[in-house]
Length: 114
Length: 112
Image 1: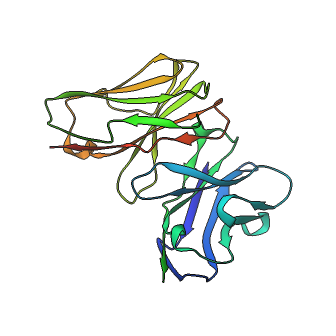
Image 2: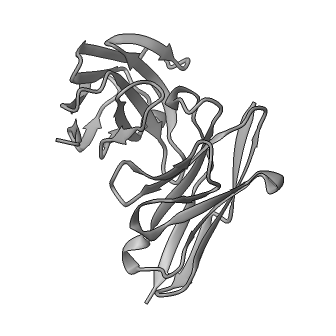
């Protein structure tokens, strides 16, 4: 069984500030972990994914995430927020990497304040 | 072409209507998916097609009927829907079932 917990359904940051979106997972097998972004009236777009290997994963739009097995975490960060980063962010886990077994977290709405 | 195109973008229908949602991709992807997303919630998987054959039906009510006429096209036929079926319906495709998902922008469905 697998699950994902995203801490904070809403996060607000000032433009230029650090973005930190938290994600903790549980999985009975080594997980594949994903972050997706959803802009208003759009589908989901893959930001980054962790499969195996390097634990710091770089994604699109300046985002990165670090897989920490000991903390069962996969937090998403960006050093400097931009207004265009305002969106809904979903963390997801899959035991095999297959979308058939993808479990999404409940999502975090990021607001960027001018 | 790296897009998944969904039509219509918005649909309002009555509970006795029959309508269809359409999804199209020309990336050569052989896996196609339907998801349902309620407001402020994550997407929920409904159906998976692999090589034009239905491989997963996540216990979806029969008032939703998927169809994959060819490798580029995925339809979702709707009949006798309920107001609680109102949601954003997302289509996605992937090269294969374990590959990166590409999502369409969705059809916002309202059932009156």
